[in-house]
Length: 252
Image 1 (cartoon, rainbow, N blue to C red):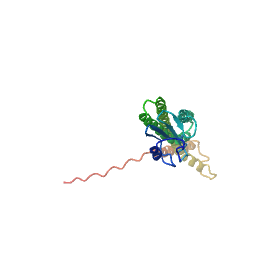
Image 2: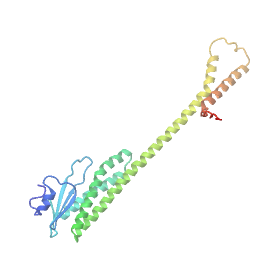
Image 3: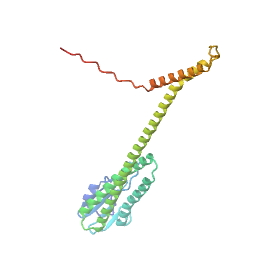
Image 4: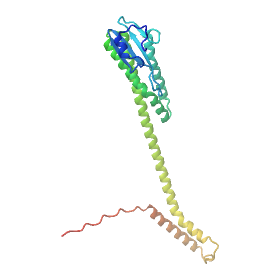
């Protein structure tokens, strides 16, 4: 039995609540009796939700199915959500990388839904039991709690999008710098490749007939190598012109 045997709640509430499962968070009102079906704050790996019950009888007395005074237990239940929200907010402010933000988002997702359903349950209870100041206070606290979770969830998502976009932009900038560096290396290779080839040719220990010539031949060879280098550079930097479309034939 989910409902404690000592609770004298109407049979209609027992039927609506069931015997083995708490179900979703909600408020059940029958014949002046109010039963709040709530869930403890879930973790990211929790498949099942751990439920708790709070009963308010027609005289305004509260009871908790796990012992202790009802009003104080309900306050502690709401406060447990608030403590988790404060802890996650501190972790968000100290998050250093995107992986930490993703982990935080995974933990936030079930808490956002649970806080929203908690507020809806207390809103329903407040509408059914009018004039109860304690219910009004709890309803307002859960509204602020839901809003805090929603804002934190939105902030985490925005931070993930911003940091991901910033990292992508930085990678694009580094790729562009590497492309420019590669381009400069290609130009240097185009300039010095002919000089290297000519120097290697004339550096061979073969009789070529230029050993006894004037130094002007050295500068002539150097000029030819530079000319070939600049020509090769122009070929490397040359852009291919788009092919012109074929001319249309004129029909008579």
